[in-house]
Amino acid sequence: MSGTASGATRQEQERSRVTRQKLMTAAIEVLAEQGWAGATTGAIAERAGVSRGACQHHFPTRTALVAAAVEHVSHQQVEELAQRAKSLPQSRRRVEPLLNLLYDIYAGPLFTAATHLWVAAVADAELKALLLPLETHVGREVHRLTVELLGLEEREREVRDAVRATLDLLRGLALANLLNDDTARRRKVLAHWARTLEAQLTPAPRDP
Amino acid sequence: MSGTASGATRQEQERSRVTRQKLMTAAIEVLAEQGWAGATTGAIAERAGVSRGACQHHFPTRTALVAAAVEHVSHQQVEELAQRAKSLPQSRRRVEPLLNLLYDIYAGPLFTAATHLWVAAVADAELKALLLPLETHVGREVHRLTVELLGLEEREREVRDAVRATLDLLRGLALANLLNDDTARRRKVLAHWARTLEAQLTPAPRDP
Image 1 (cartoon, each protein chain N blue to C red):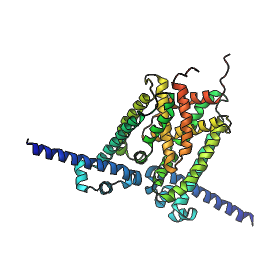
Image 2: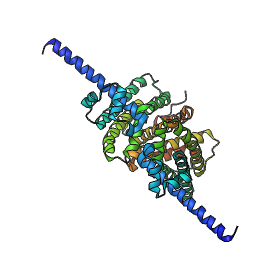
Image 3: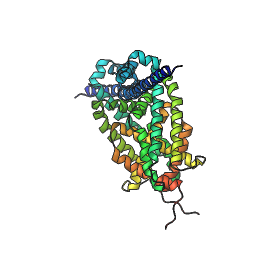
Image 4: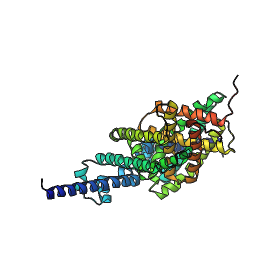
């Protein structure tokens, strides 16, 4: 293969990657705004500024596009969280800011899009079959990262249950937040939860 | 007014009450299955076995019907919970079964219907304006009842935050349950949280 041909291929691959990204981002936006019923392939392609033909070339079905979008954006958010968590203090005082960082995964269009998909899947077996493995996969990743960022040992049952409860709490807070920006209330709940986690999961420091 | 006329009026009132009930129950069912977009007045009237004209007579708009339905079914569930809670033991050991009873408010068609409405309201200002006061009202009622059933004093900040966190946790568990019946996982999380609440909110009993 000549250098020029290889360059052209790379350019083509890069264009293809950008188009896929645009489609996946648009899919999450349109899902968040219109729900599963409104998020047609046409509406997503239009939002992405991509022709319907190109959309179909990259993602043969709407289901394939939505699955890829949820997985891709989830991973992006998990990686972003891991990056941002590096600047947290290395002490017990990291628990509360860490909960606030974690919450950000559950705020924003991805969560709104996922909630639309979840409720639609109640009455749609095909959609449910698509979402369940995705949810399990992403859920495990977030769980693993949370255990790691809290500096805990996953093998202990108490740790497992506390981390599970934490992620369920964050999901519940995010659902309440769909309707109303209740940042003040959420801060109080997360502060309370952080104190609880600190007391449960880390040895109490001795008084100086 | 003669006795017969009064009897006829009572019969009419009773028929009217039954029709309203049927429409409200059908509204929650159709919302849970079809979402906000699919829950047209026609679809709800058909499910209830009521003519569209009669539906419009009782609830002039879809919005009025849905608001009445969410409020009515929420109150029903809160009252049912209060009744069922009467059979719980009067000791610290009531916390875990109480959490399981409370969870039932968040399981079932009402929660699925409400979640559909919440995500639809993200992009629908009118629907949001309808839901916010309803959500605040029902939320306060559930909060008050939870404080009472736990035998706590709402005035303490610690109690307020712990009860808030409990209800957010239950909401998050219910959202996860939409996709998958994860009863086993939920039991573990609720058992964990019950131990936490017991330790936080009730004085530890002395060893005998």
